[in-house]
Length: 227
Image 1: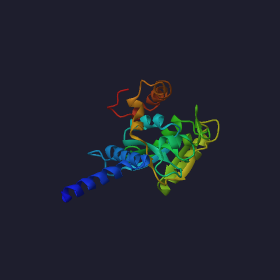
Image 2: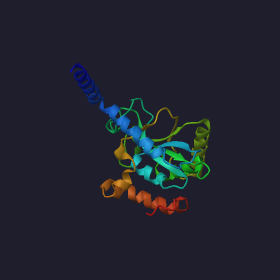
Image 3: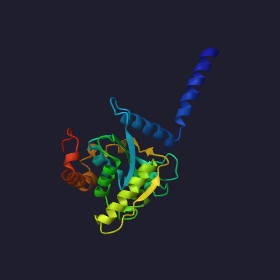
Image 4: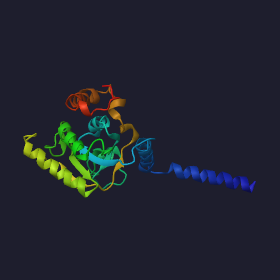
């Protein structure tokens, strides 16, 4: 009887312990699962590099980069703030300091970091400080979070080049900062547009951007993407 009682007690402690995990810890575990599911696909190229970019709502830019040749995966998430394991609600409050970002895993033999930045500066407005359209706040700022000296150099060169080209009437205000920590967003944010096309934000805001992107960069779109 004592052995049975001890076993039951241990099971109870284990279950109770899990139930008291903070919501952020549970969300972080879910987010790690997302990274594993997206990043470690069978047959993925071994020489992948990563680019972490912020250009307003991550739903908008995620779906565009996802369809590029040479891109293995795109994960929506948060970077650039001070709050550990931030939730979407904390980021949206503007108090966490994080920006909504996408982390792109790409094959540099197929598409270079400079080409990704060229596209990045065409699909959002890098001249508006802490806003994209109706989305306002530091969480919607334009930013490049580099993970190497080369990425920093390329970023600064591209910004200078685009400013000189007068692609935009106003100067670029895109932040260029070293990547500290990337936190993947909650599972329901991943591939949000393709999973929620019927929602008004997707049909009215994202869809027009996607159509324009397909028109402007049709040669760079994956062959198996039918939109």
